[in-house]
Amino acid sequence: MRDGDSAATGMKATVGDALRVLTDAINPVLITPSAWQRLVDTGNRIPLSSGGGIECRPADPDCADLAVRFLSTEVGTDGLLDPPLDVAGAANAVVAGVVRRWRTEGSAKPTRMLWVELDLRAGGLPVPSIFVGPGNPPRGAPANLPDNDEWQAIVNLLRPGVPARAVERLLGVLPRGAWVGYIGIMRGRELRATVSGLTPDEVRPLLHRLAWPGEARVIESILSVARAHTARITLGLDLTEGIGRALGLELAPFGPDGWEGLLQGTASLAPLSDSARVALLAWPGESAGDVSWTTPLRAQAGRIVRRLNHLKFGTNGDSCPSLKAYLYFGLIG
Image (cartoon, rainbow, N blue to C red; front, side, top):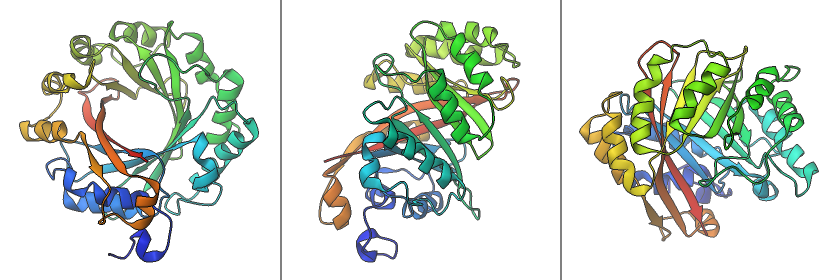
């Protein structure tokens, strides 16, 4: 067993333990061995939770980022009040603040999910982003949504002393059936929000109501692909200084059998080779626990399931979109 494995060091299970199990499931055309090793090394410093994600860039396989999800029901076992992320510096204070709110709210936890995303670059320290919210269930809005006061409290944790005017403006113009899934702080300075439950035809009217400063025609090709392959879009907005130009559009197909068509449509919008498309389609599956797993990992899970979560197109409002793919992994007891 190598240095850093939790069983070798007597530690609890880590995200690194889970990633090592998934090594054989990842194709180097999506993530190079050196980028994968950065993911594992970073995961060794993070306590294992119920799931996470890997952000890959088909046009740049040597660049991949790690995201870890913590549920409000896990805070008693994951010890997030102790600094779990020595890579994240000041982000620990934000994580601890969210957990303290969860513990004082009792059973009412409208912001029930916390995601910690770590941007990884060769030769540099991981850069943290933190997202908090009710999440994006597959069928409709969560039953318990935060109100404006709760969102203001979260914004104050993320950016102390900064009013949530842009968040309030966003909440006031959402179409019926849409909701804010997460509010987060990107790289310690950029306030972001994600809006879920939007149909492709609701995106441009919402951006118009928000007076988004980008050029709407830039996203029309993305919306055209979405209309053919998905019922809903998740929209990522920059709220750092009012409504910013940076925009993200997250797409997933109508069902698991729709990924082939969505990926083929995607290839007309952003670089996506046939080999990368095949590698993405090969990711879904599961890994069953065996003697090769560390003892702490076997104690926490019997299987790790893998699925394609979504594709994300990013634009600054006047340029061709970039493409990222999000690979989900989840632990099952």
